[in-house]
Structures are given as C-alpha cells and as structure tokens.
Length: 347
Image (cartoon, rainbow, N blue to C red):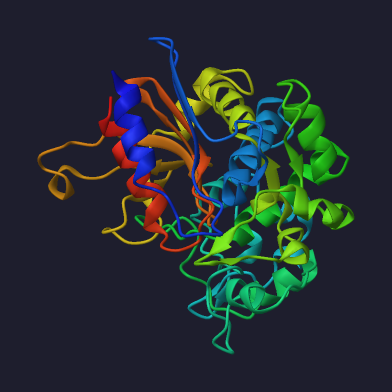
C-alpha cells in the first residue's frame, strides 16, 4: 500500500520549531487512491503556480480567437510598453516579442524578480530585507535596466522570466475588458467552484495573516506589499483541495481543449541549465529527471508548476497522479523537488 510509504516520506520533511511545515495531497483517480497530510483547506501562497492560471486565461482567449500565439504583444499593449524590454546585441527586440514567446519564456526578456539589476541587487533580495510594493511600471523599468538574454525565439534558448507573465496579465486585462482579478474569477474560479482561491492584491493586505506563513530558513516572511505586487505571475492564494481541482481541469480539457494542451506540451526547453531538470513548454513546466541522474530508480516526468515559496502542483501522466502542496520554505530550493521524487517513487 502507498499510504505507509507516503507517511514515511512526510515524516522526513519535518521542519524546525516555528516553521509552517508540510502540507500535501496526492490523488490517483484511476485507482481511487487519495492521501492527505495537513489541512486541505488551509490557504497558502502558491507563488509562480499562478502562472498556470494565467496560461489558462491566455489559452481561453486564443480559443475564442481574440489572439493568436504569434500575435505581437506590442499590438495589444502598445510599442511604448514593450520598448526596451529586450535590448540584445545592440538591437531592441521588445516590439517583436509574441504572446507565444512570453508563454514559453523564449522572449529573451530579462527577469525582474531574480535577475541582478545594474546595482547588483534583485527584487527577491529587496523583499527579504523589507516589505515594499512595486507598480507595473516600476517592474517594467527594472526589466529595462537589464540586458536582454537573447533574440526572441533563438533556437535552443529559453530563460525563465516573471516579466513575461506580468505582461501576459496585462494582455488578459486588455482583451477581457476587466481586471486580471475579475477575469480570473469569472473564467476559472467560479466555473470550477474554487471557493478558497483568490488573488492577493493591495486591497487585501489585511488578509495576509489568514494565509499560512512562508518561512525563509527559520524566519517567517512578512512581505504583504511585495507579494501583492506580483499579480498574474505569482500572487494567488489557494488550498490543496482547490489546487487539485484546478490541475485536473487544466489537464482534463475543462478550461481549454485537450488539443491545446497537446500543442503546449509538444516541445520542452531548459529554462535554467542542462543540469537543472526543469523545462518549459508553452505556459507549463515539466520536472523530468534524466535517467543518468537516477539510474536505479527512474523517476516519471511531471507537468505543472512550482513556486519560490516551496509550493508545488504537478500531474504525473505515467502514474495518473496528481500532487499538490507546499513545504512553506524558501530554502533550499531543492526541497520540494526532492519531495516530489519520493512521492512519485512510492507508486
């Protein structure tokens, strides 16, 4: 039985006193298996898993013929918005970037969040020091202060950038004719009855204490203003129960067609380095450990997304396995992925 194995896995992920600890849900619909560790309705910051929601909104708009993946972002946001966002080899490629390139992280646009600015600091480092908010324009300005990574759609190139999804959020607002929050609610949250999922915004700073504390080593992170700045790229609060429901809809054809998902997962590109087993399709992440890194225990590939605060949401096609949860810990980054491996190998 998998349950005793998973209980042993969970027991190995107990954090020091004061840490939020592990919360995890595993479901296997093909067998009816279900396992939970922690409170399934306890809200937590899903961070970059938010990008899957943004992807779903963009794909819906595409299927409604309101945009195409080869539509230039500048056609929707204006050349002024895109200008200077990817200056590479002396050329400004900002106005040429397409929606598909934003989704796939092949735009070459710098990452405002973890990439170093000219002063040597990062937004991530800033929010760990003190809580402050950033506007859309300020984050664009930070991105423009950095050099482009490569020309858009350079063969074999991809670079993970939160700026890409910030821009996609603004595209959602432009085409949906409402705020990102309202589009999220009407197109995803209400149809799927995700009653415990919501966008953390500047108007909801007073709800920060309602969400599970995120730990940076042994210290709780207190950055409500910062987290409220990241909207379409990382500001959703959810629960394990809602996350599983969303993932099943994402891969099951409820939010958009299965044909679209097939196209989104047809090609994968490394987004960090060849030694990091994370790659990106079109709007979705894959965690896949090559056989040479795990020769005795082959680990099945997983699709979904992870978040900087230790949140994870993945589907394992070979096992029909849905995994949602969080370790509520920012470091080490490998913690949640090691947990994913151990869960997958229990089946």
